Image 1 (cartoon, rainbow, N blue to C red):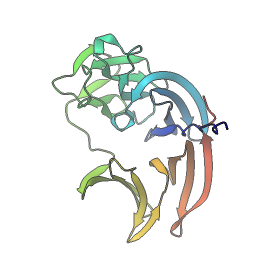
Image 2 (cartoon, helix red, strand yellow; image 1 turned 180 degrees about the vertical axis):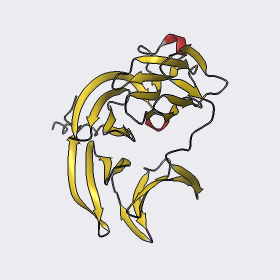
Image 3 (cartoon, rainbow, N blue to C red; image 1 turned 90 degrees about the vertical axis):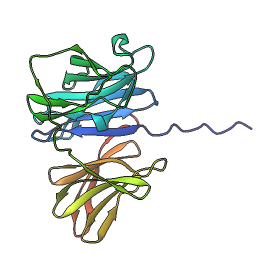
Image 4 (spheres, rainbow, N blue to C red; image 1 turned 30 degrees about the horizontal axis):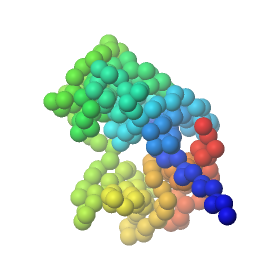
Length: 240
């Protein structure tokens, strides 16, 4: 008797949002060492497929400039696609939605440092350490020495870490990191809790919550202690 065909796991979805423009970048990861970039018009919720990348991009160490023109990202290349001069891991700044580096720093194959944040539209902070070395610079942006205030506040709780991000109408978005278990996302306000089961990435987008779940990107508003007007923005399961 033939065995039933094994279904493919859903792709892993994460995203970056520009803080001052309705622009986003979505990372669709799947299979494990293959990532595709999508540009996201958040005004119309339109998505456009872009570059393929063989390796890993680390969204938590990446960011968009407030106006959405530039992206700083930390990456680890698969053997055949790595940039040899970097040693296999690197931080790059690119023009959205491209991954082509206008500025580039090697990290020598290690992952303890790397990545960064924008401090304004024309300035950035680089998470550099002793293993970071410059390969290509740009005159379009300037580097700041002081680390910016992080988007998420992080605190140690029990066996894991809890991150909190902003408030909307009194609701706080929390992410509890419980490695090796799956992260837990919740909305909390004055003792009330809204669970986001299956959520793997979430953020506030103006007056709505957007999150990734089972290969789909969804959005909803929070009203009367629950999520309302829930809708799917894009299904990346069928996307290539």
